[in-house]
Image 1 (cartoon, rainbow, N blue to C red):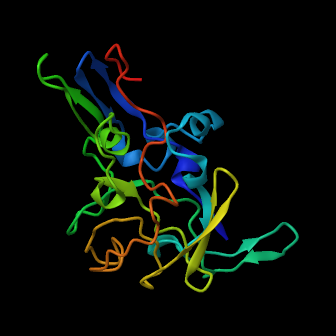
Image 2 (cartoon, rainbow, N blue to C red):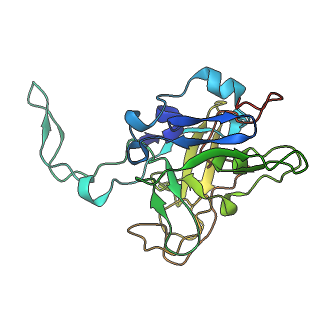
Length: 240
């Protein structure tokens, strides 16, 4: 059984705001609905992949699925066909259909899904003609301006929640990417999850294995950030 990624079915968070000159902010909207259509831009388009600063060989489309969440991992009743054939029985285990999208990431117990808090996608603040403007937000961290170092997974404030990938092949999972390639990733610490770099010590019920920050999805092999679309400030000072 396989699951799709949030990138494939949702592509990006909906955004609102303006950047004019060297001042402005773009934020996500309807954060608590980021997993569904209301809070996202809908299914991934070829145009986004073709113009993305993220190469297609690291954009995950789908992979082996993990068992479903506790509240919905078992069938409540039989699934019976019109001819009486029983396809699924009560109590049969189910898997996830897609990953949950971006989560807040950081040290301690800060691992949590996007909720009602406004999330800054991109912010630029001008400080006068003699001082360079400052940039912040998810886009600035993932796609920094020239001369600024790109942050790695363990430094980012938001990363994908990839716990719905299931390491079902002897502790490994196969994942399909946008370029058609398939890669295998190993569950290094045996907690049944694949961690892209969430530095959390939250309990296994709400995060990854307690106290274990093993990175099993290297950023050079799979994209675990938030934004596939290009961001930046154009020569005229407007948001691209």
